[in-house]
Length: 251
Image 1 (cartoon, one colour):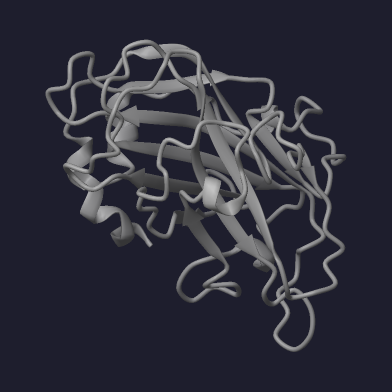
Image 2: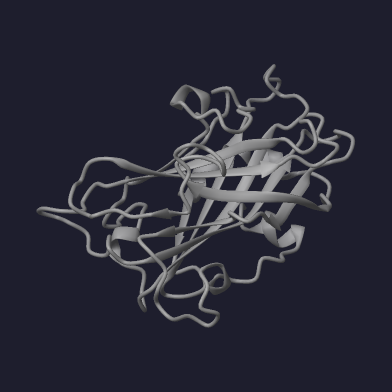
């Protein structure tokens, strides 16, 4: 799925953006405060129908004059020794077509946060890296972008909570013939960063947001398995990364 991001690679040729204290958030169904928002998603794993949606958002820093794209990275870890088949997506995997990205918010009935994209945002199939750093981990990388010259490209008001992306995980191959094992496994899902990108040459450059808001992670089923810190977010790799290393993972 790496090639799905290639059309947007030009957006990465930007000056090194500063770290910023604006918060990033992740949850199920909506951004924090929304009527359907939830930290934990509990699924009975008894149907192949339906979709489970992770929503990412961020608090806008000062200086965003022309947001053209968002890059994001999420680390997922399950509670077993290895990533189960239910959590494997991409060509040749058990649930090859069960992961998708989206930038549709208002049209999907979500209005809690600012819908900057207004259905203009293009969201390719997320890149999904199985066994990223450990046998029971995976990494999800998503890029939402506006076409060059789109009239939707504009400023953000500092402090506004803005919808960034949606990750849709459907329930296909959960039960019945060909079912993929592992739907009931617990999982900790942590948003590592959101890069707020502006076109090259925009004053102020772009912004690498890592500061975790209270809701920067989401849980699938529960998180009761003992881990090094007995807390979901602590099981994922360290969040601090250089801008060069972040750009490298998109090449």
